[in-house]
Image (cartoon, rainbow, N blue to C red; front, side, top):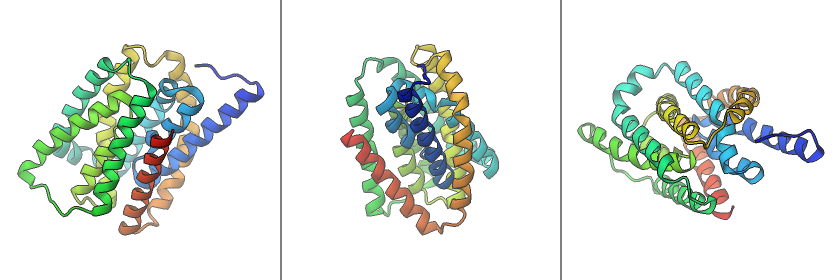
Length: 250
């Protein structure tokens, strides 16, 4: 991936910068959403492989930042380690076995997962996961989201639905999801780099993408603390619906 300073190249750079900036705002507000928002939009300009690579460093850094701010490392690792372990394993396997998937196939698979999450949130199912079954359910959820992550880097829909079903409070949700994302994104990007889906030059551009991401993230964090718990849930639902529409009609 190379960016030029021609008129078309400058326009692409500007749009990519704006997409990552807005992705940072969403990430800061909801605790999720940077790759879910940015990757589909960037793919329209630079291709899905380069889009995934461009957000790699911002995704890692933003999750480290939020997990550190919420102080959720120990609690999240203790509670969600089965989910993270199964997710990491399935992510690496999915990266390897789905190198030949078409963009259309990837988009439809992710769109289905997003729509499923939206349906679950719309109908607000009253089921509760008993503590003694949480590790088993977490392992299953981790495996499913790992497949999505390895295919397209968009592991969020199933994770969002699952963690919200645990009735976590807003800041608990943000802290937990940041740790889960981080501990899976690391092996995912390492596998993509090892298998040639991400190149060294891509990572250089990804480092530059930290600038708009950081600006957006700080703005989103300020917005999040102005939202009530109910408003937070509604905004998250609206975001999932938007992403589902983008992926279905892309």
